[in-house]
Amino acid sequence: MRVSRTRIRERIYSIVRRIPRGRVATYGQVAQLAGLPGHARQVGYALADLSEDDCVPWHRVLNAQGRVSLRSEPGWDDVQRQLLVREGVEFDAAGRTSLARFQWRGPRRR
DNA sequence: TGCTTGACATAAT
DNA sequence: CATTATGCCAAGC
Image 1 (cartoon, rainbow, N blue to C red):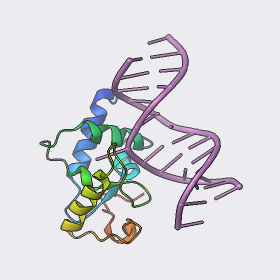
Image 2: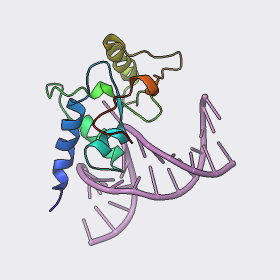
Image 3: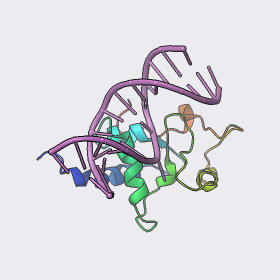
Image 4: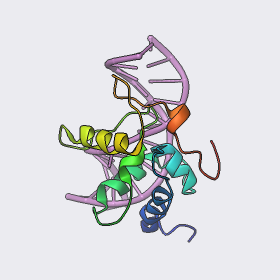
């Protein structure tokens, strides 16, 4: 049975919850930390499906380019950016952050 | 059961 | 450095 498919999202939540404040992670990184290499897309799926009361810092998850992934509505990316800025994450004019400095180096690096 | 879509990643141009 | 093309795997229909 290995991974009960539907549990995949819950694994992802567990990882995202471990992201410390003022630190960010990429989808691919979260997927790998969750023990699901290559499931970067599923990470986005899982986050899109969670509720606001799940206590999951979804806003700390960025794409591999260090940018905020657009969800569906315009302007949402701006909100996410503000949340991170409030935690101490810096963004440049291009709306990117230095993954080299702010990426969360979890239990293991890629 | 099979095709389409998706909050991605990586390589090529 | 921006855009395009291809690969990836699970969920929805």
